[in-house]
Image (cartoon, rainbow, N blue to C red; front, side, top):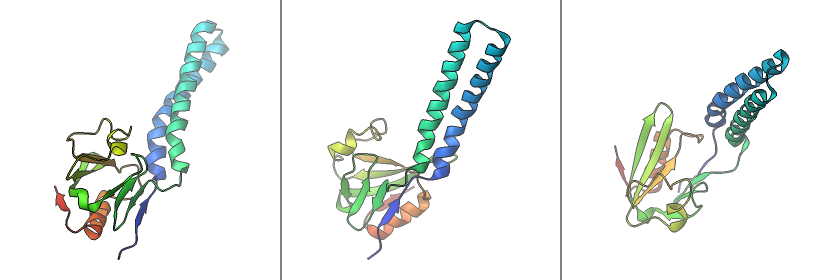
Amino acid sequence: MAAPLELRNSPSGKILPALGPFLIGGVFGFGALQGVASGADGGHVLWIALLAAACLALGAFIARGAFDTSVKVVLNSQGFRDTRAGDVLVPWSKVKSVRLAAGGKGAAMLNFELTGEPPDAIKYSSANAFGLVGRNTVHMEISSLDVRGQDLVDAVKTFAPHVAVRR
């Protein structure tokens, strides 16, 4: 029996997307400082400073996931569980097929086609709310995890050889 596969956040998958808001916040902050130094209208400087603070806060919110070392996804001989989407076990007996979908450079999803509707906790979770293409499909975002998509597909083949792998 294979050991369970436990996946966590990838630090680079969380810090790199946060660089944009940090850079924009820095530019706005520099602009606010220049406005104060040149004696510009206080109202305009305040708006620029608020934009800087909002961008920096967004960057910090995105980057905080890099320091979260808790297990996000578990695949084992019983099924899979994604704590980001309902935290319920989906048994392999309910999984018909799996497909690795790469949406572009670095973006990846693992799509599980189920024999019936997904559990309500997954179906109505914020992680899957906008990702329901078919009513029997569960989408697992994997680009922010510390694993490659093909390694996950290989783990599914190991734990559930009956599950069809689609391209």
